[in-house]
Length: 350
Ligand SMILES: NC(=O)c1ccc[n+]([C@@H]2O[C@H](COP(=O)([O-])OP(=O)(O)OC[C@H]3O[C@@H](n4cnc5c(N)ncnc54)[C@H](OP(=O)(O)O)[C@@H]3O)[C@@H](O)[C@H]2O)c1
Image (cartoon, rainbow, N blue to C red):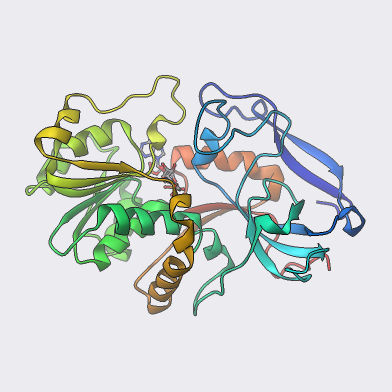
């Protein structure tokens, strides 16, 4: 990024399936906004890190959802950690680190009502935790697991996409609650991380030929809590193995986000009745009034070493952001995926 240019990634065409590199988005260069462009109550932000979330694929579809779709020619929406580099707001001084949905761009002008001062990092915390454990994915895991899953000692808890940002936190929360936790992830390396580093009881590779058999063997007492990040066939299998009065936390369905024809559970769906499954979807914003207390708990676990995390950082800034979408859907990330635009200590434009 040159200091007088703002590079952004804008939506050029809605994809019908996967995001197509060079077609769905285009890079745009425009004059860098300056302090002179600010109106009262606005701040100028310099992006440090951009969060990459599977939900971003959903934001490209023009259909009813929990948030309006990104419009053609609009900068792609994304959660960010940024630094205030100019301010006409009484709330934020220059140099403050903030989080917001300022999008995939180097610089952004935002109203102060849509910007949040960064949460105070705990001991051992990193700036990037603001998008991971202490950000949207950590909060999603926290509320999904504690409010809906409600695991207790002795329960069998299964988490899909368990080596991802949300899944890894959800699985560890269930372990802290005393449950027997089974993580599902793609490939032996991720499974090894789940067992050896996160201390899960079992880790199953859904890409292995014997996955269905292994799932069955790992759940002799069936599944009390299933935290679903992927939908599709794995959800179907979890429903087939549901225990009586089990709780199904419907968090996401990444296996279906790129498919024009979405597949759901088959005959196993009747287990909702026969096994009295309580199945509930949620969006993290539902719990916005409880973010502070949840962050406090997550920060404490992080400081105590009870919550471990990994992050996958794509370098190269906005110009490489398109690549990051592919990483999410091919599973190249372990833990939180983000794009580094400017590291915190990299000479700020003050
Ligand atoms: N409800 C909410 O408010 C909310 C908020 C945040 C996130 N979410 C949802 O939570 C889920 C996880 O999001 P995240 O941000 O934490 O992403 P993530 O888990 O860090 O990354 C996505 C992971 O999904 C796995 N994956 C990709 N394609 C798959 C497929 N076909 N089948 C099975 N697994 C597949 C990949 O891991 P493998 O290598 O293991 O395949 C990949 O690493 C998503 O479904 C997302 O939409 C919901």
